[in-house]
Image 1 (cartoon, rainbow, N blue to C red):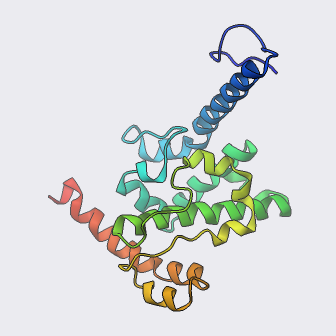
Image 2: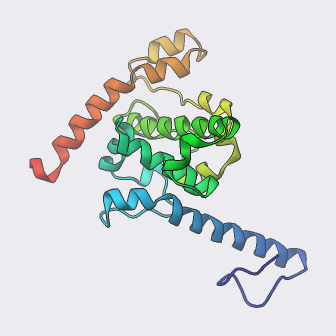
Length: 205
């Protein structure tokens, strides 16, 4: 294994403890490089106002960033395309829809997962969800996780709290209809969240 600069002295250590240290160091280096590539569009959009790195989780993002990542717009879509392409395939947003069918299918699964995660974080901040799935993983860890590109990721929907408009229906369906019920109120959640962000913005005070 090639030694990564800054990850210890000397070359590859053949003992098991040294091997594990090398593996963990390489993984950390890979995550850091992935974040540098993956968040380039986010840095272009938000400038130096916000910091994004390999440890950034959804809960760490300011409300303004969450709102941007929730609302449909070409710029928002391209920022997520670029995150996935640069982090997973080494390309950019321009290359996203030109991928071979099998790869594009996986990328779209991950795109919808990331979109859901931003919107579920919006609901969490409104008190509609207690937590979001994979809340302890960083965004980079999620986009590097092979499971994010599987169809099954579409069913990663958190349990609603009593404040969620679909709470009673979710109870009645015993969670079987949860994916549809929770997502059904995304437009209402975005409306309320946008009002809150606007109300708390320094420009409106």
